[in-house]
Image (tube, rainbow, N blue to C red; front, side, top):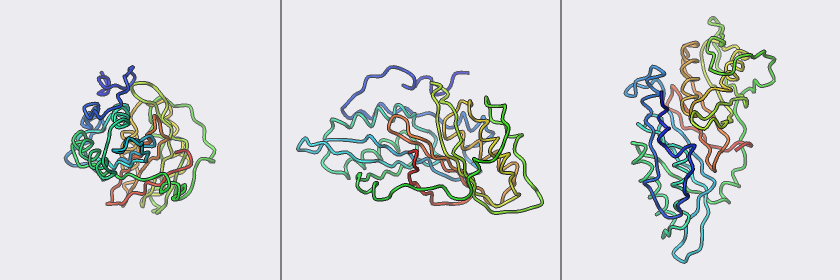
Length: 276
């Protein structure tokens, strides 16, 4: 079956347009992947947001002088559409030779255009390089499981049957791994990420979680769907009182994508990691 992104600019030669062109943005409906995961968009088992950070954002002042900034875009996890990443990049490039009177005008333009394509309000925050530099780098919470000894033979598809837990023992903990990798479903390019699991529920076997995450290594899917699949597999196994899963992906084309999914109403942290 043809992937929903096949009609997008992804994986195709594209002309880079340097003047404002919102029509470049290409929506991809979430409904196809929701259906594949057995989800109904009207009653999702999680809340969340997709943070996109843009490190190649520029426009012109009325004087003709360029401005550079770092953009943060928060797309609701229940929005009808995701925005295809290459079209997002092409759209942002179209600001390069466009004149805006102020930072506020740029921010309002971005919020309007992205919200229209996503189908729900997208929050936009623009920051100077100085502001972002002052924040420094973050580290992930909890225990890193990457040094555990495991044997792995399956890489093509996620293997939820690898996951194990102690149903008698209830714990509350945060775990993370930097070994998450999947592939773009259209181009086959690798997507590298770090993943965090925070939960209260049946004690998860740490080595089994690591083996499960490594089984995504050759799996083809977008960042958002990988995180949703992990959330659902852990939810089924642990029957947790609370569960939050999020990934911090390495940037490609000047953009990094960071999906957060949680059973709770959380205020996600969008702090940058060393690989970002």
